[in-house]
Length: 304
Ligand code: FAD
Image (cartoon, rainbow, N blue to C red; front, side, top):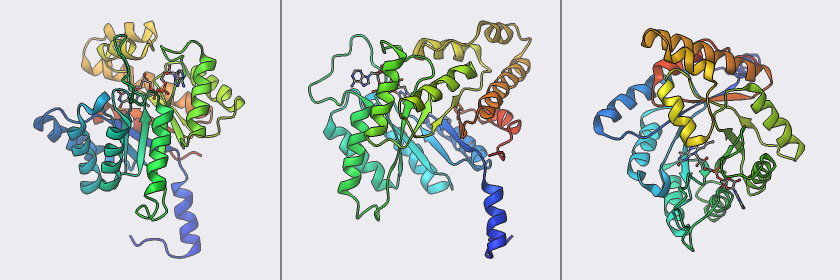
């Protein structure tokens, strides 16, 4: 089929493209064998034409070479755009500058600026970049320095947002103040932490708009099919899956039934959030395309 070249054809094509934003989160491979499987997952997800795929990273650039490997694969071997997660905790400004420069040199134009998780024992070094907000500022600073190289273009910067209170925050109000400050520092959009109640997302967006946040807040969803993963997620993020969902998954007869229950539950949640006006969805895939595709099959992305 030839590309649209007349105004009516362009209008028809634009109509067809007017749809919800779609993105997937992937984590870098840990071995050659898992990188082979990951390539297949990327190819399967590419077929659904997402707007970007995000590439997670660990704190302190522990797995930097694996992050770069996956990012390069996405850039060179697929038609996808990567959004690379970058965490600042445990890293100095100079180290982060090196990584940001390397990412921009590769052709990356999207960065999710994060602090990363810290343990209670963590003691920040004097030159550590302590919060995501300062990382956003650093990316913007480097972008300004490289304007000519970026052909005057911009780097798209995302940040994290929390429908439930961040475990270290004293109040949800404090979370909102942090979100406002990340937008003022130059963030373009936010992706949310997982949540299981649509009201939590709606409430976050309402309260964020009230305090002046204007950027899109994209809901992040975990396909809720694996109870062990949901328990682990609760440990890491403090966000607990509903007991009735956990019970249904844990008492399922087999893997196939667990998958049916989890997919149905996730589709229901996503539909409710989209009905509330969210501009798109971000799927935490845990590198499993099968479940992500099951979920996606039942979501109508064409409504605007
Ligand atoms: P910040 O926005 O810096 O906030 C961190 C904490 O400090 C909050 O409690 C905040 O209220 C508080 N705070 C912020 N600024 C100030 C200030 N000026 N004064 C006092 N307190 C302040 N982690 C990874 O390690 N790798 C990943 O790839 C990764 N990807 C993620 C993707 C998404 C979409 C999300 C939502 C989270 C992700 N995380 C990842 C987890 C994230 O790193 C943690 O939630 C982390 O604890 C906080 O990161 P942040 O960017 O929100 O930090």
